[in-house]
Image (cartoon, rainbow, N blue to C red):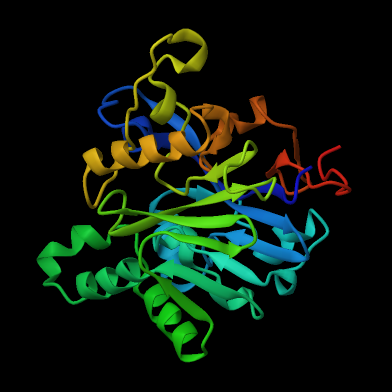
Length: 296
């Protein structure tokens, strides 16, 4: 019995992203394709998103162009490819406030947004620092923070302090403070609804970019004794990233395929997927009982 369906939806990509950005210490090892994605969770009468991408206009477009993003598509187009509309989304979990995760909030008019209190507070603090310290804002659109605060004015923003269980039935939030960002978090789906679940999925946000972050440089097949290798970008520390990875792996009984890195192009090799008319990938992680496949 599965309560929720989960899809990872690509909305754009970077064709050549330096490998050292996704894997700490991978200097001079070339480039990888970096899909830009968000996740959709559907079931028990709810439709939730994990992150919402970015808006390809104003400073969001400046950042997208700076990072070499290609083939951007709006949430209306991307969700339309699985028969949904942004207005169908009632809940959004923001794993962190980098531009490619926290833009587009205006495209989800009926959603309540959840974010770690530390995440939005510390980015507000960072925005006020002297300009010579602007490296910390490298991947942040200040307009996204302002729009997030406006969600609070509308009573559509819920700030979370650490872990929070059953935000939706069987869906929990967990914090990784001072890791990839100040208040990054991951989303756990206990898909059988049990507290001690045997069907758990972790949507890792940017705490995990690629399989090697969990399985080591050789991957699970080649390495009998895997080692965690954190992502390359940490506003906090790589130590905290490794500690968060251990907590995520504990939640899935150390079954690494159940920790989902949304920036991983090779999800297609582990889960059913298809390419849309726009040239973007839909990956189907699991299906709720009675839910039709969107990739068949």
